[in-house]
Length: 635
Image (cartoon, rainbow, N blue to C red):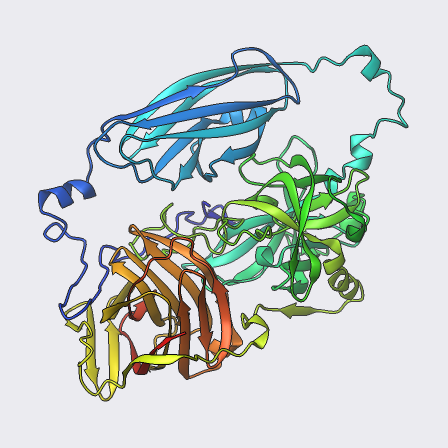
């Protein structure tokens, strides 16, 4: 997501991180530093990879409807990309003409792409899924025609420095309504303005501080639920995360169906529950600081429905600002396709839906055909733990390559949503907000304070009195790995860098435990364990941070993928020494600290490999961590 300044006089571009080319690693008994330079990437071949001149064997064919379509009719623009060259295409982008984005509502992208820059003529969508040598990839953009006329423009497909352009034309006619349909009596035909409360849906913009400037960090949607300006939304839309502190919230009001929302108010958080991912905010003032005269807008609050009465096949409408559908409000339809259970919220912790819901819709309105709110679009809740999340925020150099781009992870989320939090779970927050109570519940990340103590047969123990287990050691300008003082110490010298070391053995399913103490605190250092290590481009890291966060992430063929996004935990934040425990296996990955289970997930592509210890830096260099009493258990 492109960052925009809230103050138009400020520089809108985020600063790029330095370093970036260097990733340190120490493996086995042989010391190896993975430094991406001209010399170590294969001489001229490595240099050419850094500065490519062409993408050979790259072709693209774009197709659009050749016959006339009607207003409100669905249609598709298909892009078929072929790679007949001798090298894989790792990433690619597709630029759609703005005439297409503005003349039709973009309802779906398959496979999902992330919206990017808009140069005034075209909007860019980036795709991280690669195209193997000799392979093809078909991308389908689904639209609904909005207005009559001819949509004309150029679709450009980009792979590396090469691009292919195709011109498209889509002719849209007035909707042909049959006479008998036009004669439907008003009481039998719902009036959109009365039943579909689009004006009650707002856009919420989080203002964050970056490099000393106040910028628009990300946006989501919300639903007006009271005449005095209470708005129901998602917690992740309005709360700070590990990387950015939310300074204020801006509410943009929907004035017209066919116009962007108007930024009108600042708002405060009244109630928030990060575990439910639900929140209630309230308008505070206008943008000049004057008291908010919200009721003068005459916007009807959305009535609360009964989510417990929903059944399979019931119709649902979704309204919000998805980001991929242009700047105006977007409506999609679907039906209840199922329910997902989650403790302690019962069998209807999530409502699954067939409706297409893109990221910016997060926090928006899910309503019945009668216009009653019955749910809130939120993060993926279908039970598919391998699916992506909603609301991509590429604001941080998460893969530490020196650039903030499509190769970085979303912070915290990205992709399409397929589930709703039922309104029933939001009722306590709504009632508390109406009575003026203020409460913000952060996600402590402790999995309900479940105990997590490693058990099993010890197959390796190291108290680091010597290097009998053949750890990889290191000493150069980028990092130090040494065994001294009864510890294995990792000192990461640059910022935006990580260093790791493995023990010279391979394991399949195991439990790992170790003690850790920060020796040189830097405020944002991260550290933990790694498993499934194949090489410097393929491993899994289970980490915590000095400032109280934890995550499970992996390198897969050089790409950084988040399995569990960074989340805050009091258990991590309130410690000075740590006992870190991890489970690695094809059935699950789990991370615990100080006998408390923080999180668990599954990696469907898990591979056995070496295990070890890791430490890294972000903004602050020269971070040092000491590890002691390293155990490997067989479960």
